[in-house]
Image 1 (cartoon, rainbow, N blue to C red):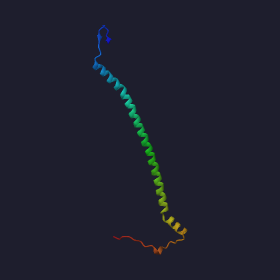
Image 2: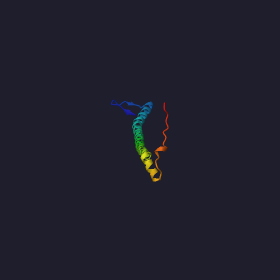
Image 3: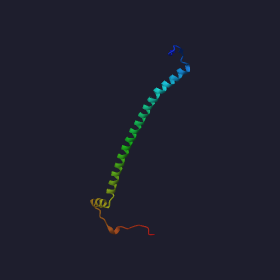
Image 4: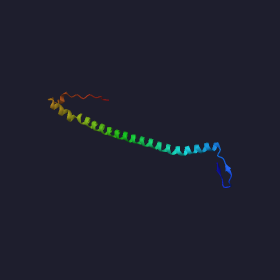
Length: 101
């Protein structure tokens, strides 16, 4: 019980106690939930950045391998490998196949 300036006493009603408790819980819960959600967001952002780095690395590797394939499939490289194997390039045996429309 509390007294006001005139010396009168007033009681805190049970409903007011409930409201005060709910207000206190709200004041405590909102900042805690805010920190929790920001921590989850930060963790998600870190995972996204790590995945972006992995993707970038894999794309660079794919591009490098594609260049190697193009180099190995070039006509000069094929002729070089054929000469090393003792094969010759006979132009008379080449026939061009195509459609004429």
